[in-house]
Image 1 (spheres, rainbow over the protein chains, first blue to last red):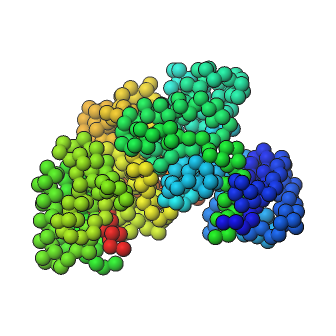
Image 2: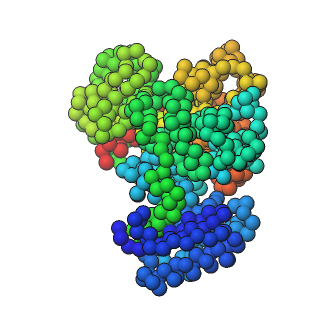
Image 3: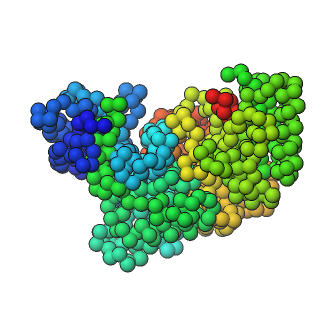
Length: 298
Length: 298
């Protein structure tokens, strides 16, 4: 596929917009702060209009957005950011506004489903039909592909809000989630690590006990993902997973907790290829958006 | 679809075999104990051969089997019961043996995926594309359809073995699962209820505190299913769910635990239609097998 599409990684703190056909062919990229919807969407539209003047009409624009969002093409509010706590942004018709301004088809999904699609197209999930992309950062979110198609279901998964065992004796920290207290995100996202240990997660040394506890919680979450979605692979991105020492620890701990119950070579013998970082690195987001745009041209 | 197919609900304690086209057209049904593979499979073959003499050739046979199983049609061990603890049954080529003896195509899946397919075809999950069928009985198992197709992934889900919070202060029972101790199945399947309270689950009165604790654990599990699979509905069967007082308790508790985080009408306002018993009742298993057989003729 070589048609030129636009992609927007629409995050709660910044927008990244790019034009291209894949990882080796980004023609232009711009990033700016997420301020008001009017200003931010206006900047994105301006960028793509300038690109169209230079490169010709875009075949589509893909948007991988912070949320919650409405990704159901049959819904009257398709393409909207719905009940976000970010001021000014609830009920913002992101996809519709962009599509009308540029007069192009728009592919729209959650940021994590976008990243999953990008990893499937060009990254660490190529040739798989069922896998999970999980991001551990300021929040915890997950996207999934099942039988070759992105999972939406009722709305979309909210993997960060699953419940896992919390050992209060060794970890009296009460959790950071305003909705569920000590759900996965409440216990294991970046802000929980920082608050529990009293310093920013990125400043905590690699041999600090914080990471053993983090691995414990993440391994319980991965056990739950294996038991519910039965993924062929789990791709883990986000700021916290830049602590790359976590990967080998996590692989061993997942094997320990599953305790040989799931008799699959991928888990028993090849776990180094089962729990992996994103193949696209920090470009997963914007390339995922470009992949969503390509899907919208199909 | 009116072609005549056979169905086998292959359970660890009994086999149910039937011939028909759907819920209102079961021509014949037989049930017998699960003994050795030779004897049990022989009895199934005998039954279907007699049925073929009477009704003509079957278009296919569907098998919804206890497991773990290999449901991957591309695998050399497709259709086998694999690592089951049931003596004599590990590595039994159930689908192959039946298919060769009767010379018919065989549809094969887990018991819970079979039940899910039956509920989708004729029961409580009609017209949905993404839902979960969960059974709470001697064990806990779950099947799922995503985007209109049954979920297998790496092998198949093992929903009973997800981890949930265990409040040791109020519930010092250590759990019943030989692999994971206090996973969901270890805390909330029938044997755990019986062992914790010292009497068979079916004899415990409806107003006993056992049920409040059961609802607590099941609601945590449903929160995890909502957050990972984002089902449009959750159908709950199995012996424990014959305690029908659990349904209204569970619905309220799931709303309480999700705490308005998932902004979907189905959960916020229509939860009575979101967490439901099987539409096919105790026939879900064998009708699911017939649906698997029909799928194998397509």
